Each structure stands twice: as structure tokens, then as C-alpha cells.
Length: 83
Image 1 (tube, rainbow, N blue to C red):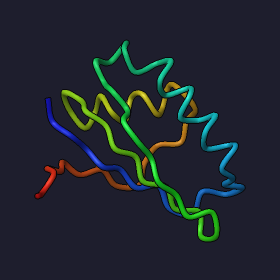
Image 2: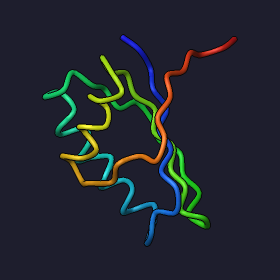
Image 3: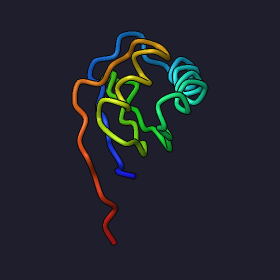
């Protein structure tokens, strides 16, 4: 399965607690789309969030976010881990 990194920019009202709740919602929905959200990173100051997942497609990864909380990524790219 492919890995994808998505980027959410200028998320209004971003807090660590709000993001943890959104991630929890992703985990509740992800199985429906054969997606596995692995980790996330964020910058509370500028409202940027990065999410890493394994998914069959970009569309499946996006569908999880859309259904779970509506915070669809601005960009999503397939990535591979380097050494």
C-alpha cells in the first residue's frame, strides 16, 4: 500500500487538543476506506498540519478526512521513506 503525506495550511483555531480530536475521528473512520493514518505533525503558530497515512489512493485518504471532520488537505503527495 502507498504512503501519502498531506498538508493542511492555515487551519483556523488549531490547537493540539483539537488536532488530537480530529486524528481520533480519522482513526474511527479509516477502516471504511482501507486507510491507516500513522502520524501527524503541526505548527500551532501558523496553522499548518502534516498527516502521514497508508492508503490505496489519494482519494481514499481524502475521503477519511472529509467524513471524519471535514478538514480536507490542501495538498497530498505519495512519499517513500529514505534511509
